[in-house]
Length: 213
Image 1 (cartoon, rainbow, N blue to C red):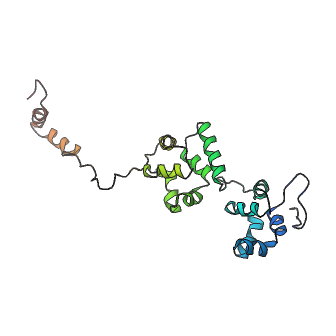
Image 2 (cartoon, rainbow, N blue to C red):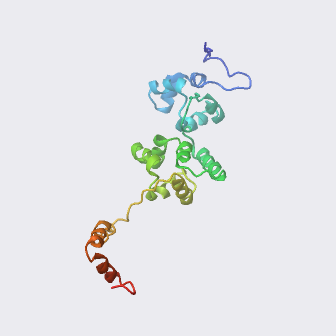
Image 3 (tube, rainbow, N blue to C red):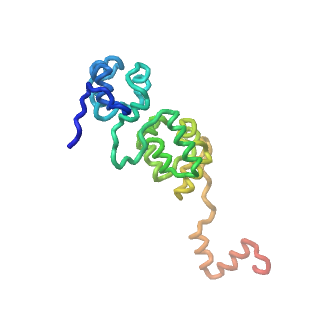
């Protein structure tokens, strides 16, 4: 049987308040919504889902709660695949810890970055586009953007992470340059030439092997 927490009650000694208690003591869902310019129904959901991290700065600035208390009030989700969305400072700490531990993994980059949805917001890209990188590798033309967004430490980290997943990172030719021309003679055609009568002689003459032809 779950414990019923009175939203009007103060935080327990040595502990922190729940998200419901924080919102109630800040003026209730309606009052908080009015102060933040958000729909009351949205704020009401925060009482059980937790206050989104992008709104923490406003809660702290208004003296409603500390960052530590907001962290403690986040609901525990079982089998969470990705770390929760974080501030730039927390994200930087995750990246530094990952590199210091010698972990070069695209999957770990996604875990630390909060998953495709959160990373897409950091990068200004579509979620579907970013999600594909888990299987195909992170495109080389997005490496600088990943570093600038704080999702990776360097291009070297991204290169090693792509190598580790044994999937080639997608590389697009520079704009304005034509793709490389196909070989003049395919392997199949070369095989047919060698199979003809006299084909081997003609082939050795063409490539000028000393002592032959």
